[in-house]
Amino acid sequence: MEANRPVVLSIAGFDPCAGAGILADIKTFEQHKVYGVGINTARTLQTENDFISIRWEDENSILQSLETMLSQYNVKALKIGIIENISVLNSIISYVHQKDTTIKIVVDTVIKSSSGFNFWNEQMQEASLIEILSKIFLITPNYNEVLQLMPSSNAKESAKKLSAYCNVLLKGGHNKEELGIDYLYTQNDIERLEGNNDEMYAKHGSGCVLSAAITANLALSVDLLTSCSKAKKYIEQFLSSNKTLLGYHHV
Image (cartoon, rainbow, N blue to C red; front, side, top):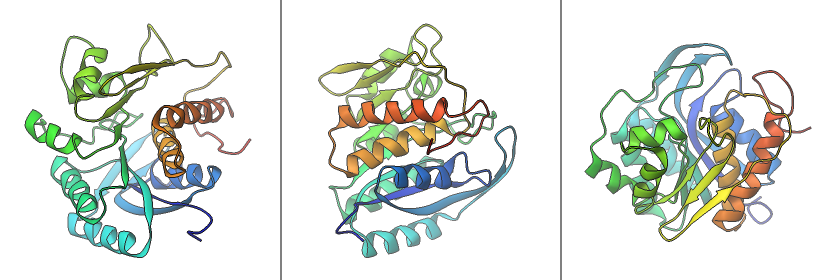
């Protein structure tokens, strides 16, 4: 298996409607011809329209699963989705670094679900956040999330500040002034990623799919900017696949 396809790990929640979380990540990985494995962080009860409940997995269970996966498979990149709190996120990232510092870690900073449920109810201390970010390769916040991570006068300023510690893809889906235009912030540069003009529709789990596509490309040894550009094309195909809130990965 590993001789043909790189292994990519999703650490995320279970969404029974398969629009977001592990199921969406695995679909995305398969389309990118990488082999996806997964660790569950939470069991949610939700549809594309409503978030009903969540039951978080125990931190020790997550770490035990992580130990098994990293011991068995040569994971090239991993993506982290919903996490109960900063402490659990730090434990996961620290363990990965202890095992293998070459694994590229992508964190989809999911603070609120598309149906309005808040995952993080704690106030983040900047020092703790910076310590975690320094171990991450890329975060993918939208305009609302980046302001919660690093409060400032505007989202671009927040993204620029965060890019001193890790790469930041600022997604433009919530930016009414530049709808659909993303910005990739690195320590030394800012790249503007234009969208296309095709008709697209809102989708449940689109942030999960985008970050999973980036992670898959990174595992295939594609550079960061190209990985983000390829993932943007993939998510645009996903968004235009139909008019419902649940997108198709293969059209």
